[in-house]
Length: 111
Image (cartoon, rainbow, N blue to C red):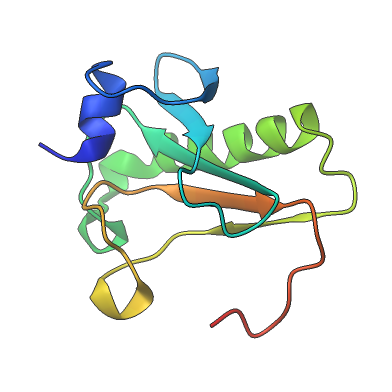
């Protein structure tokens, strides 16, 4: 069981900023920007490499949630969304998630 599943199950505390039937959003415990939110589906999908057509609705939903959370947190100057896929991209939790980063100017390239 991943740490994200344990957060969904309320076995591990998290600073939750948004929740609905399909998703949960919470503050990252190791923030890489002044605002760093992790948005996860409640249904476990290991990574972007495991996505199928059946996941289309939930993945689109995560991006809508990202916009809603960014608005709620007043990220009016912009924000970045990131989905890491695999070890070379820095994915450390095998439960697909969207990072929402903002609150400062973000450089490019990112890594």
